[in-house]
Amino acid sequence: MRMSKWMKPEPDADPIKRILTDNPEIDSVRIDKENHRLDIGFAEELPPEPELSKIDASVCRELPNPESAMHSPDLVHHETSSRLDHQHFGAAVIEFHRTDRSRPKRTVWHVLKLPRWQNRPPAKAFAPNHRKALALAGICGASAAAGYLAASHHLDPWYSGLAYLAAYVSGGWYATREVFQELRKGRIDVHFLMIVVAIGALLVSAQTEGAILLFLFSLSGGLEQFAHYRTQKSIGSLLKDAPKRAIRRGRHADSSRQLASERADRN
Image 1 (cartoon, rainbow, N blue to C red):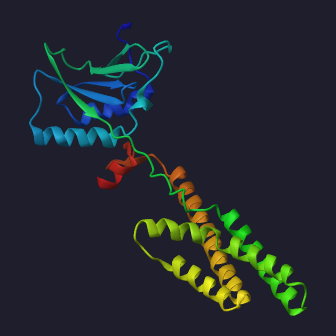
Image 2: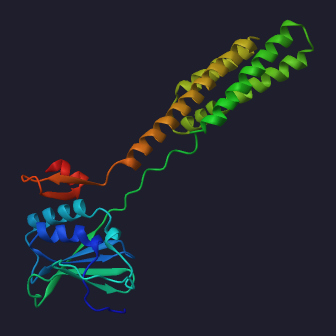
Image 3: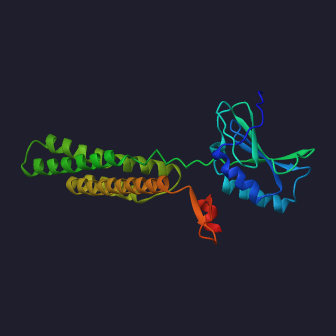
């Protein structure tokens, strides 16, 4: 790996400086972007386990995204008054170390594997798009109305039969899939009862009532999906706009300190 000379850090190393300030036991911090890990260097030996756990928690709070402290080795660095230097090992590894004390003869590294946070994917099998669900509910209602009008005006039974068939298929599309999925798991829910009632209405020549039942049920399902979509969209917007850092005012009017928002809440 190519090793560059020791250089003064840029402002993106502020979280590292805070970590070293709050944890004097730490001598060095190495970030490996490719392997998604962070190594903490201690002089000569590791601290006791309880203290090491506190240091791990402090580092994770202060630097939830270690890649934010990374920059290109080819970046032009400007001299600063910081007591922190850094060194690049290729483009994916960067190591920060103190300059306010002599370098230890031996550095013991502690590997801190960072968690990979990932939102749980939504269930795709039976969570229909609200637009499709509402469209099928509309088809079901229109077909039920067409079947009722065709039967009341004594038109050819084929007209009313096709209209009711379209109402049953569109109104029970998602509900039937949900029933089969739950039956494989040995469970019976409200969808099963609704399908049984609709089929029973068909068997006793009450097609209109069965179609209306399916229309109301599919409409409620579509509206539920729409409400769920709006709620997820609103929560996502709030999380996106939430500040990642907060400024904590000190005792003196001219003193302040920038902290991770989670840490500012706990202090």
